[in-house]
Length: 521
Image (tube, rainbow, N blue to C red):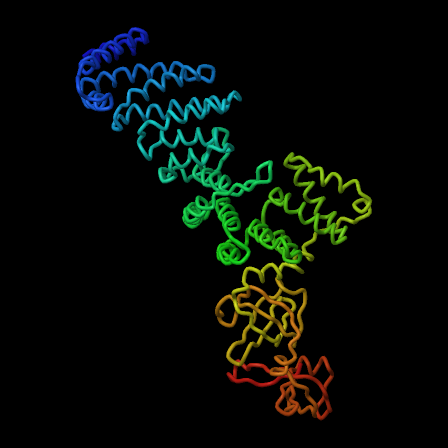
């Protein structure tokens, strides 16, 4: 068995001589089976493959082929590389030849990277290379197998072969390291390859429209991938974009009757991300008010300005249609500034707006935040429509701290911050509120709050007052019958003992006495 001699020739760089010796050994190992009578070619091959001397002959020549692969590992020699790789495939070596296969993963991956980076990428040759590469039994998971993925991911992520490639490679083979961000030699940090993979796969699953208007959407495959992607969102909350594509798939899979049912639980968790509201706006494409409200809520979220450029353009389009030209110009100037700072192209639509009279005559505002706040409660109500609304009455307002005290019933009362929902609020206002569960020492968290007119509810907690002010001796407060008059109100209204007064009172809970009473407002 000339294994030693073949190896020495390889190491000496005498590949031609090594190949001749290895071919002779291979032919010799085959010759014993060429004259076997009475069995099929398939059976003959099985016997041949199981013979140990045949296996060693294949193994010896496979490493000669491997050296030729190394010699031709350049974009210019990709045809020769593919030819030598094909010869290894033809050997039909058993799956346990892991050392060879793992070495091949690095060589194949390196050539894919070189070919793609050289600008000479040939799609057909990439596919041929992939088809041969899929024949080998690599160690999974392994560093080499992940390297092979990175290479073909880069080459195929924008092609229609990506799903097929990713299904073969199988995302279950990612290593823990593949979920970590990667640091490039220049110090730049990039998204982990696993996150890139899940994003690319989800993108390819989304509906696509052909040039003939036909919609291509593999619903079954999208339904199968959605739980996988949802789990990635749960397991890796630091990943930003898988959550976005989870929502996009939910939107694509839903119909008008159950779309929100599947989308809302997810959207609630991610409600501080602007793109959630952008996706929700798509689900209400026939309701202009809700679309506008979703845009407003999205633009209240914290995110880098360059992320908002597309949304601001949509918002400007709506504002122009509403003839809110000052607000529209404000959005346009913000998006143009962000695009210029990041050297993004200015869309033709935006350039066209800037040439029109309305734009030239409009004033750029400091911001549109007041407008956003005015409409954002409508958007928030979409998310929490499944939370029961409760009617409350405002019992006290601390305008400095933007806190109001409310009463829903004699069993439920407390206070919450109102700045998110109202610019101002007054004692006696009735509100529709969605609460986030219970309270913490009287403090309530609120999902939504709207002002409403509810005279029937107001009548339970407010009443007209008519009577004589009575002040206890040496005190600064007073009473009208059983109604308490606070010292500050006595001073503000310049009330005196014995004076007739007509006004309004509201029910109030006395924390010290632990009982309900009434106070003048």
